[in-house]
Length: 495
Ligand SMILES: [Zn+2]
Image 1 (cartoon, rainbow, N blue to C red):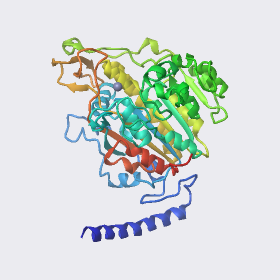
Image 2: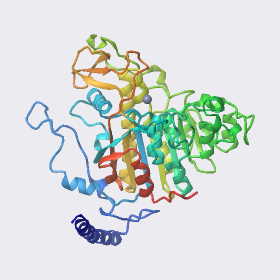
Image 3: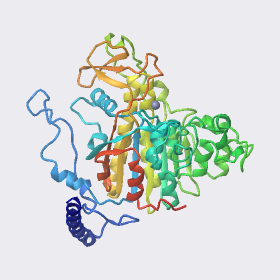
């Protein structure tokens, strides 16, 4: 019965797929580099004609005023599900950015009935599970960190918290970025954190422990990974060897460490980068002057010694703080001339676009770090940066018509929207919102700012463009590795 049913379904699918392919062949306009159509869908540019507007329809106090849909969505969603191959993929990550964090930013910055630019305009959306594995028992570890979660989507393999680009037994796993590069695609890796931090590191490195930024820490924390012990080297040394075309973020201080083995023994990692042919820029204005980035002259932009400063100043939650006068967030004076994530994303796309096709990962990393700090303003400011990055990616994709944009968080976090002015066993802060209302945020996994912890809920993943249907429903964090490499038409075994 089941077999018969599925055979019937398959036959019906084959017929409709042939019909669709016929249309595509007749149009003949999509096709560069691995974008041959396969599977159901439209000819490629239908999605760009879909305008998603999820603003509340009108006065939210009236009947129907708060609804976000302007009518039946069936055709818009059908038009948004395109062919399954794309020339380019842009994966945008909000570290520690799940539904509480998105809602908080929307409520504060844009209004409860408003849409988050970029993020809420993605037509296709689902959730993925994010659990890690326990290193010893190999059983699920229900609350992941950024190393295990990033390793999941970058390599398709679950690992233990702290593991970067390795499986639960410590064996290196190839990343999307490494595979894309081996297949002749251009690659980019952009973050607001140190480039050695877990999320950017999973695309370029394989180390036993996420803190192994440079040769010094690697010697003690990841001894078998050290070059002097015949390993692949520290995260920074592997980043330089991985040679993405575009690498932008923070973490300059590790580049001042000195290699103690290998071809660049006795030289700092900064000198190594220069000798390997990298163009190095340290400011937004230097970045503006860069016109190309490729394997002859890859670009390394490092804009801070550590993480990039956060866009907005702190408003740390305290015990009972939610009962204090409400706070309006303000700019962080330390941000200064730091390039914003939207700017970095645009620049990376400009440098990567071309005949080869590209894979680009972009991370707004300090949504997570401000969440750890119980700092709602820092957290929302970095979610605004995430929105800017998604808007830049979406703008490019809508014009390009051959680009898949995926937006997700790597794990859920501690911040919660709670009853206004209420006291909890945790740390609270009340904010003045865009609507002219009050909103209280609770951080309840620690009483020490700086020590708030991740939580284990499934996380939203949303998409626009060819192959975007793969995010629908419930998937796992390892799924993107497989469908991104498939959408790009990559041979996962190519060296
Ligand atoms: Zn974290």
